Length: 380
Length: 258
Image 1 (cartoon, rainbow over the protein chains, first blue to last red):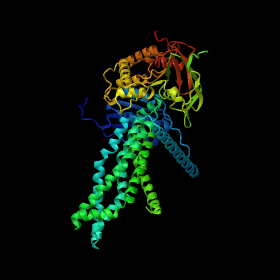
Image 2 (cartoon, rainbow over the protein chains, first blue to last red; image 1 turned 135 degrees about the vertical axis):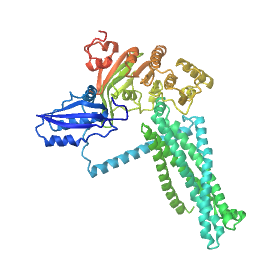
Image 3 (tube, chains in turn purple, brown; image 1 turned 180 degrees about the vertical axis):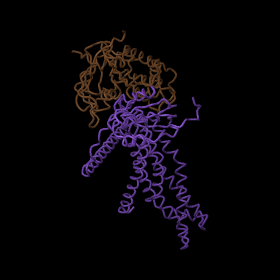
Image 4 (cartoon, chains in turn purple, brown; image 1 turned 45 degrees about the vertical axis):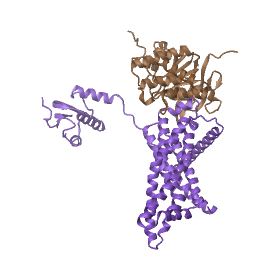
């Protein structure tokens, strides 16, 4: 017997005796070793017609593992393809047993895929899928409205404790990140602005730039993007993992509407918290702009704030806040919808979270464009 | 008035997902107070049938009756029917954001006018029934698989249900825990007088608890037989597939003792 690590080289001789082709295997047939090329046998079969049977001789075979089994199986398949019987009797008993085991259940041929549908079928399918998706979404919205009615009439099945917890996690807990990012956004806008405005000696107008841009647009958008990534994804993942864990089924089975119990508090919490976060983003970003204005141009703090006060009207301010509330609805709906329609495995939860964020941000930008146009028409 | 001896009557139930038919035209009944086992190989549609019975899936064709009332999961009045169900899901399906106590208390808070103190007492009692006294303040993630299942059972019996459903109660449990759960099912049935429907393929459980068993066959997409498993196992009239299953793959018709 050989000690480990001193494997004998695996080898194969092909002997032809009358109509019998014998494969003489020697050495250690292990996956970690080099093994003879299989093509040798294939070539031999083609070169020597009239072979009636293939047999094995393993008197010099050392150790073996799956490497030998794969080889034997290939031999067998090849022999079958050539219509030659392959006699496994010469092989060690272990090999024969394993081969028998692997052949015990015939291979299940995969059902041949139907020919790829033509373009019209594909388009039709896509239209139907989209229609069904829309239909689903409308049902979701309708159920949410019913749940809202239940809430207003005081019959909603939701727990105060859950709701307060959601208020905390979507509101107070989000303040630091919203502050940090809006501060930096204000800073960046002011920086770009000051450099351009200095050329005309109009440094002071940086206050208008930051104030109007942030309150009208960017405060709400920044808060929205942050919350979509932070809370929208969390909603989808929470509800999605509840779906995977059959918890949503358990709710329905107790006659508790997942819509009222899970979706409603999340939507309401986010709609209540988004305007507050938006105000927070507005104020902090104006501070960020001030830091730049005061430090790299000679605008004083008082001048800066006076200028902001003159530039930013209540319309700008409340317009932004209104938008943020709408963004809150969009984010919460995207998160909850994706969560409730999550599949039943772990990957599905990840997909739900991803698509919640993408859906939320896409629709927020669309909504923002609609607002921009309609505010312009309304003269706000 | 004549009382229908059947708690659940299923008529011509066909279950399907999209184009794929799971089971065709099932007919069976579950008698009041009996323990009915739905058995069959993996993937034959046992759990799907359970989902149809509790209204989580819609039947493609056919009807399900509870007592004499047609069960229609989409009707709003069916909430009241469902409220009399107790369901133990495969993984327990405890609401992970709530403690065990809160899990059991939630159905009580939703459907009864009991005060907080009384609810706490009931919760405590239900927990003691399943051998989990003192674990109420824990969260589901802090419990072992067997404890989660028992907590799920405590939640399922919170409202003293008329029909108890179990989805693979012994899946993932060691033999002793699974034995304890089987005993618990028997005791609860006797104490509550509930009708019990169990989905399982554990032979030991089937023989220990079933009053009657329905064998679902994935190949023919229908129920092959319905009866007491202890009799089915030796009955030569029964389809060999069923005896094969009940004998754990031993040759059908072979005498298990000899």
